[in-house]
Image (cartoon, rainbow, N blue to C red; front, side, top):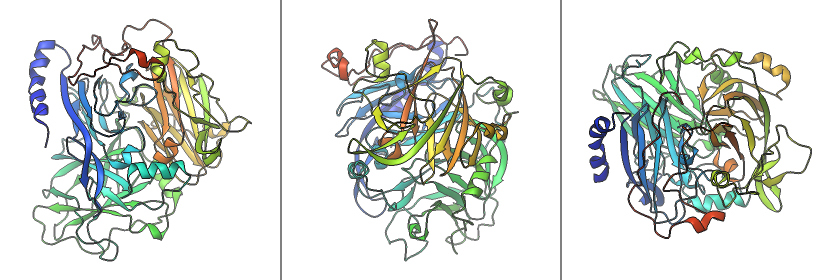
Length: 572
């Protein structure tokens, strides 16, 4: 149940909208703590928010100002990050170690940001210490303003679905395994909305496990926002006898196409319209199953139930087939088929495709190559271009603010260098308002996802083999979808283009937690050389750590620290 403070705060929205004569504010009060649950029939300690797992949905509208008071009730430091929320010129609120000191156990901290010029489906999660494997995640819905029409009929309902590979071992045990070079192994199950599988097969699924039931009305159309918030497993999502009409991914409306199933890789989010057009002789299976794995993973299949109000019987028969389970070429072709709807308006009245990204001159090129875990100085690490990122004790953004030398270097190489791998805090020096091309080359044996905070980038190409200069001839320069997370298949590459118009220091990372935790990330510094009145200053409630620990006040207030946002003067 939502907290009483949530009800109190939400009653203020209309008043604040009038009082401030600007974009409205919405307030959330979240307590992050351990709860006990048994999603796979085994009792374990899970991270909940206000006692909920998954956490509450943040349902807001474009340009709203969001204030979230977070109480850390865990026994270790905490940060929440807002996957896909761009935090325009406000990387102070990004919730990763490069921009924020962790919230100590028992402390409150208040995030304040504006969902500026964005729409779409995103999620939040704890960014530290493998905590996402224990929960702590939830959905973010950013709605269109009323003056911007949807490019489809208003659905009859809106349903959020979280998919995750799940282990009954604790997040502390899992991260220790990763540190010791131990493979995570087959997940103990796939959860759908924090619940285990329906007992579709008595031999594979034990009795007594609670499962998700999604109730629908016949003939109605629902928007399903589906997120893979998992650890490292690509999942295929499908609903028995129903088509998935893709309409949006991570803030971009797509060309509307029907799919019978969709591969959703770690960190990715999709919106589908699903019409309840079956005869309801039975319930129907909702399935999330691992991709590109062998038959031993069969028990790790997530199954929920789609229940029509006039259903006549339980779901029956085998699960809907996933043909060519191990064929990455089909999956890549599916990914290439996802296109930007260049005629639809999004957060602004102008069409999405009015930004002609294919005609912009590229200013910087980075070919970023990953490798599987390897020993560096006796410890298991992962690298990008031969560098394994190790977070300094002083966050990068604070070091920049206080001009502290030696915390990081702006020397991340644009190619793999001919030298031994090393551990370092090396950043990409981005050119403000430059146009960067990044090619991810995956030398690992599994699908990897890469995410960039602060931006939506254009996915313009992907193929198997090694990227070369000639690969640019295959780029989609017209309607490649803009999103914040892209998959890179093993032995393949993916190319993105990104316009560096958002000043700050921004995290570029592997979303696969085992790769990220061992060092597969880099930060991109984007500095406006001119004085920028619209870039957000150091927050009044900033937490200090590392070389700046002496600046921290001894007490931590339990009350939100509220200060106004810079005046909204239009486009950032």
